[in-house]
Image (cartoon, rainbow, N blue to C red; front, top):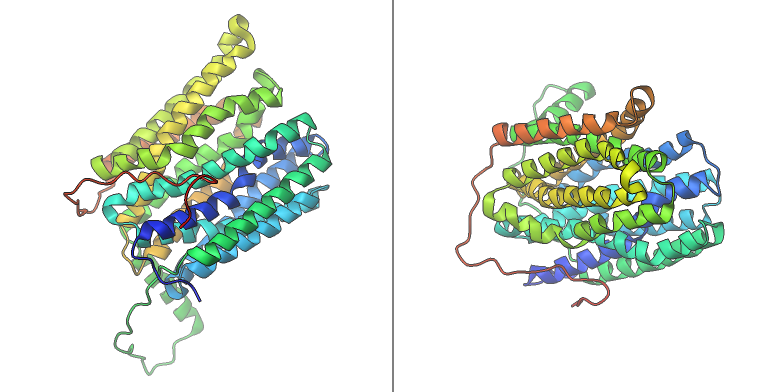
Length: 442
């Protein structure tokens, strides 16, 4: 039986975050590992590597519309635990990963797990966190993803780089990650309660005497589902689809751009990623507080604008190669860090806006719409970015990203209307997220 909800919701939130962090250790290694390990020891072609990148997003896309309404009916905890369990299996597939097939099944399982895990984590956070604290709490959840990936990279990257991504080093690291993930599952079983409260039964619904066809019932159910989501949330989801497509389109192209124009040294590329990784891991909850003070729209718009500005500058940094050589990675890392700061403020504000636009009975499906919009962009983006880079220019995805993100920032400020929020008069206590392994775990 799950534990009852603690009088202090922060105890449950800390336990949930620790489980999330432990489950996220492989993410940092996989970001660079799939291109380098796949193209190196496994000798995979670019199409196979692209499939490994996109299958994860495709599975989360297929899972999330199902998981959202299901959580509003059966609760959050069982989906959270199922996601953690599947993450262990995905790490097992990666550990075996001596071929494309094993990596494919690992990524597929990881995508299903993410569709269960992160949507349930958002819903649990929305249940436990007061609205006036929502930006901070959602930022702390996002930090666990980035922080776990950073810790995992600190553990795994040195061994993988020294061994030049040899099969034995890959296997050892993912067995370690599977063990840490199992520890996170144990913490969740013991300390993460069910936060969903079953709504009281109302009057029985009137059943018409005329027999309705299955097709009519199907479309009527879809219509009721769409009507239950506020129009402002649909507009926000449209913005998220476009911005997620543009941003995801840069992910496979960015590594290619650095390798072809600056350096193919994996160590130097990894070092350039460290500052933005630190920002994502430690600043999201703190920058998330901005949305609690200035509203949700300004941080989102500012984050989109800063990221778009970084995208338009980065491809032109190659002009500095003739004068400073590979030291151009320093300003490149600086722009990546500025982009990370922008998104660290925008992402929790965007998620808090989703919570503001929904109520306790529709929160699961509202986050289902939001995360589905993210996944649509993550599925379309890599293919579109590859097309632009191959058939137009390697820099084309950067400029496309800038145009879309700046347009999204304008629409966010001019067309999205925030619902009124209750603002508490007492000071908001500073509650930094607990850090594994030194943080408490009561």
